Image 1 (cartoon, rainbow, N blue to C red):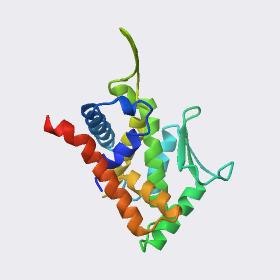
Image 2: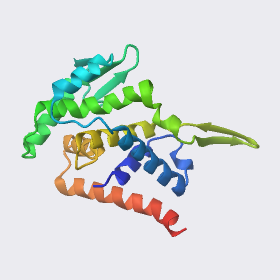
Image 3: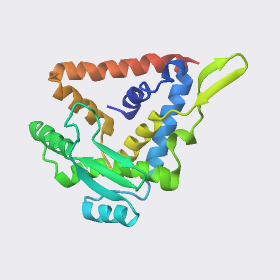
Image 4: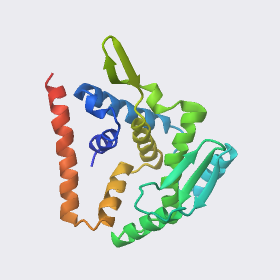
Amino acid sequence: MSALPLALTELEQDEVFPSLSANQISSYLDESIRFGRESAEGYAYDGNLTRWMDRMIHAGVRIRFADRKNGNHTEWVRAQYRRKPPSIYIYRFSLEQLKQFFHRSGYRVSENDLIALHLFHEWFHHLEYSRLGRTDLQLPKAVKKRWGPLTLKQPLPRLREIAAHAFTQKAMDLPWFPLWLDHLLLLSEQGWSKTRIREHFHQIKNRYRQIMEPEERR
């Protein structure tokens, strides 16, 4: 499944999404994905996890493997980046969940690659603060409210996640957008059948087309 429809599901979670036009949505999706992919130049993962972890540590980033404090695995947080001090936290339950998922699906994926999948996403967020600038602040702010001649605008934080997924896909040379895996895992954990999951992705594609078609006809 292509990146754009999946990225739309991320953008839809932003509070100002209902006020965006089709043209704005298209622009935000394209630009955040482009920003993430271009930022991945020079960060190609070659399977050598130790080398990349050393590079991150030498850049001043702490890497920690942690258990969830509340034990709630339904909250969809696999890893986190914290600015002070710069730290990447990878949750062990996520690694185990991914390992089991790929095993059930008949794929052999190394634990190092699963760790890298988490690391590169959070590494991008570190780069946003240390070198690149935040994705949502690189793109135009969206109108949140209007009071007569006054307009309140704000950035769209969800663009940062879209860019991080695009960065990870490019850096790891993945044939799929990482958000696709998140959807698969969440629905599988909820006991959805393969048929129902396929229908879910079909609906995502249709929703994307329905939103984009008016913009494409102009």
